[in-house]
Length: 132
Image (cartoon, rainbow, N blue to C red; front, side):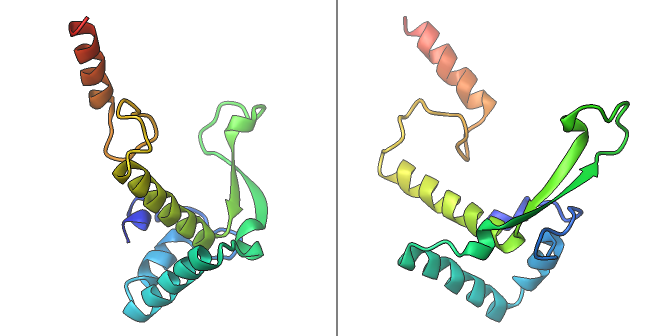
């Protein structure tokens, strides 16, 4: 699953006590991966997002090496269920793929899309300027 590869292995376990490294290890097992895919497919087919994926426990952890802890940016909130976050990533990737495939996104839209970079934005801008 590509959706999980960029997730940080050293992150703190979420509300379900499951860290990304645990989940990465779990999906290496074909049977476990099959069950997770079944859950994802069921969410799509039923149009249902289970309530335990919506609930969160927030734990505020101070970020290391901050000069002052007077600002909210000096703290890291730990939130949602890890499996729910993974499923959200998969759904987001699928939606983006289908939106691009079916031309629902304007061709000059670059922000927030996979496979688009600052270089793409620069090339588009240069092309636009040179064509005027």
